Length: 153
Image 1 (cartoon, rainbow, N blue to C red):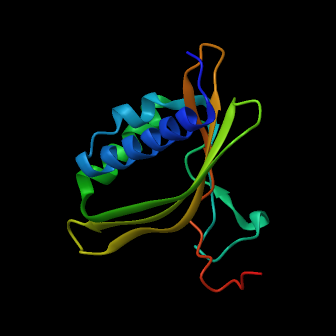
Image 2: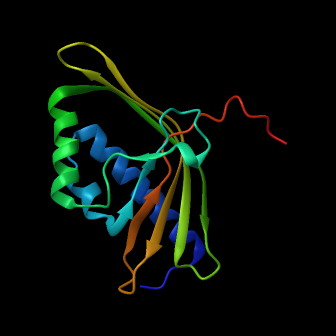
């Protein structure tokens, strides 16, 4: 399938929307199916840790069963209070084989037993790659970061 830039942008937005739907429905399978097998996902310890020297790996390299188990555990032990996501920008490489989506997320899980919040809030950069079979896969993402205190120039 040949994409023009607008088609790619729409397609990348559909992948962002699919991920949102997976959290809302607590059905992780479609999200896991769109992840590149080499994906790694570093997380900042807090939403204000913009320095990548402080970031950690919580889940390691993508492994379908391990990641499914981790997300199923979240679904079993928490309920979703809200999941608000707003795409701010989607950029496509001139070669039309790479894309990124900048998304503000505010996803609040509440632990069933304690009522303790488990909050994913901040700006993320989702990176996608076009495979040789023309399928787009989710390749990497930054953890959620708070940019509200950084002066914009």
